[in-house]
Image (cartoon, rainbow, N blue to C red; front, top):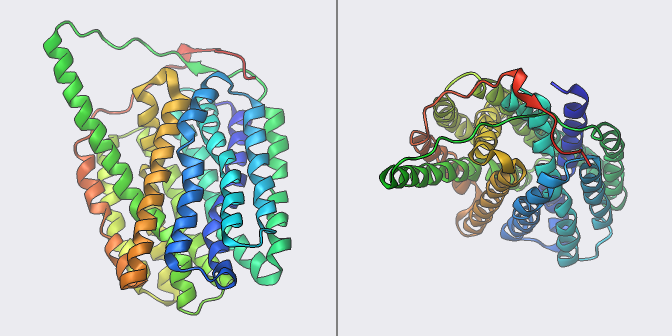
Length: 400
């Protein structure tokens, strides 16, 4: 593995996700000031996520040609700048606008990050990608914790700019260590189909696999994204202070970080279909249990729920990149973009229903949605992951 490249891009992922993961908590803290309903919190989170996700395939095309340090460093700096400026917005529309502009940096960073992480992994792209996502998920876990303590102890006009400044070391590290050319595994040509019938059968099979793939993503992320978006409001309504419920969300996201890494490691070594099926199915009782448990038992349940829901994360991204190996940035961006966008839409729909029937019953129902993801995973190919020989690695286009 190229340790310096992987470390730099993973550090950037950690930093940008610390900022992104605190958005729901910030909106919850500001809900009293701006008189926000649950659906308005969900809508703002959805708009922010859309800006950072639906742009990823387009930024991925750019990243396929410009893979070097400047795209990664600029993207983190962009997000940090507008995150800091958002603290001074006087009303809800301007706050959402500023945060949304900043989210474009996240949309640019993730395709660049996935290309660099997979390239740094050499013969183990899923493992390297899982390390990249491990640091990102760790940022997602730390963001609510830090934001909770910061916003409880100081004004938001001071706290948010201070958190934004914390991303600057990652900008400098990426500017230094992403400058060398990447080593990318060469890909063999796909076997030719000799008959029109064979082409038709492959096309139909690809269609069903594509539908199953999207269902796995959507149904899994419906639960995970809804919990991340709405749990701060759920715990705030129960009377918890920001520092405490920030930590409660943080343990869920920390579990997601560990699950992402474990999923990538196992995805390089065992059947990916079986892994997706088992992990998503096992997440159900823990996702339900964390909503109905108090005291110390909440912490292991939340950790395990986050871990199992995120085991498929890096595996699904690598599978998407393997569909078109010469367009890894575009396909990785499309997979992540679809993941975040579908999760944001479903979280907003959940918030809308929560305004009508209550937040607790909606979250309880969402805990069972991963059952559909597990069943959909059974339609995916059962092939074992491919092993790539180190001798097939070659130097591609320049890093800048």
